[in-house]
Image (cartoon, rainbow, N blue to C red; front, side, top):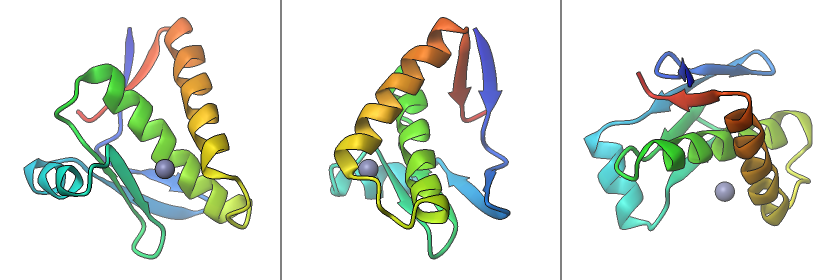
Length: 103
Ligand SMILES: [Zn+2]
């Protein structure tokens, strides 16, 4: 598996998104029953770390698509479509031997 580290963040439309993966954000996400969150106003992707590598990968892709939706698609992509796109991309990347990891 080719692991791509995301701890240094990711750029979307020249906006730098910091990736927040740590105990504090794990706890916040758990309180809200979320695996991840995309905060476009502050340029942050929160991704929970306590559910294993596959779910980390999927959650990162999901939140990245939410950022892309905001910056490129005027928030017009439905949340169902974001879920489908992220599942599909996670499977496709897995078949290519690629996954996203925190560090
Ligand atoms: Zn979502």
